[in-house]
Image (cartoon, rainbow, N blue to C red; front, side, top):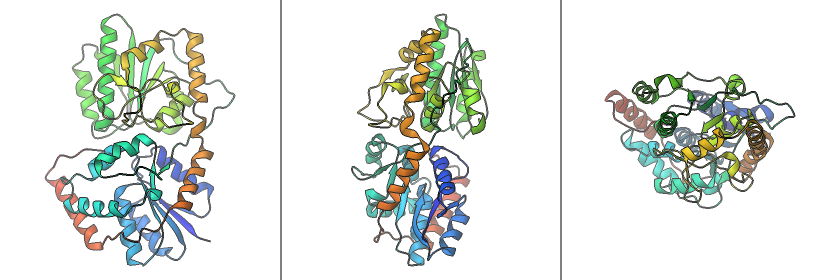
Length: 374
């Protein structure tokens, strides 16, 4: 029986990482690797059993190519391209010129059937970063728990906005936009609080912005929110604001959700989660010319102005809209991707490439070169 190998970055347990771990628990022929070292060890020790390799980031992809070449393994390698900002940072020569060279060479050999994305918006955005995958990519979304019959709606009567996510530049810019929006509403008499949960390299930007605010006491920065506490904490607020899988987890927690736009600095958004047909196209917050941009203040005040009965109906509809993101559908999508992936015969990466990439990356950190965090 052939095995499949999955690697996700253990440092950030996002939705796709959660899906991969779930996949490994539901299929006995799936091996989960939680570090680069274990990833390499699994490839070497199972070289005659591996059916395909799923690399959830760029560095694991080129490591997989390198070791399958050394071991002469003709197995498909699937690559997760989950948001353009990740690859924008990856293809930044400030980190490693050799890495850019190796990745560009790898991308030239990469087939769309071996690429995992979250939406068409991801594909369109990636085109400017040499990732020109127009057709054949696999949309991999979810997973979340489907709505049950239980009523989880127990919001506080006081208006509050909540965001949960990793503090990186392209997410923090949207948080700062929400802070600006809330300040504008506070100035005309609204009583709103904003709770922000997470951690990451751009955390200080949020702290500095709030510290200088006239309404300092209305903004609250918290640490990481454990997944097991997500529903209880988030469901107490009026509305969720953010992007990615957290949007759908929030909707399932029983509150409306506003879709933030990756990297956006203006007070704009993609409206409410319920404004879109997710059976046709997932909307995660990736920039897209095909999605209508809305004024953030208008969308927020629409939710704040709802009476309790209207708010409950919107919250219930938000839960129902999450059906396309069920764990069952997500695992089926991943299985389909594995079955349709092909061997990349022209991909070449050497151990020397990996060594130079590692040394250049260490040097870039030592001299504190600027690069985009993901």
